[in-house]
Image (tube, rainbow, N blue to C red; front, side):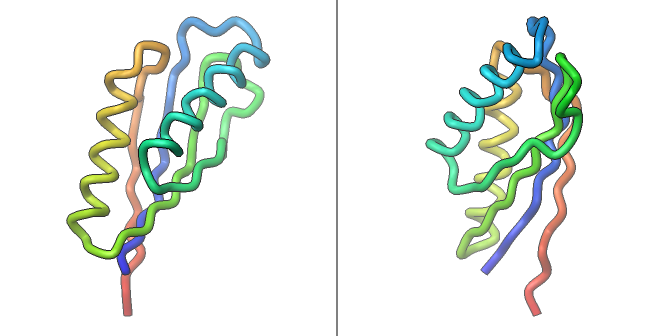
Length: 96
């Protein structure tokens, strides 16, 4: 088993209220969840209109699968018109 945690720092430039931000994040979480086997939560900047930090937990049978998921998530966010991906942090769970 291979596991990783992602920290995704996002900017949401077209948003002017928390309600609008939550709408965009809900759609993004739905799309990521439908596309990749992961669990997501907003872990920081909950009260900021144009910022968000998402935490994602990923598990895969092989290391290559895990890397493909990580790169796929990054690619989806880089190509998404409503979000700017500021930073990605990856922490790997070591198997013992």
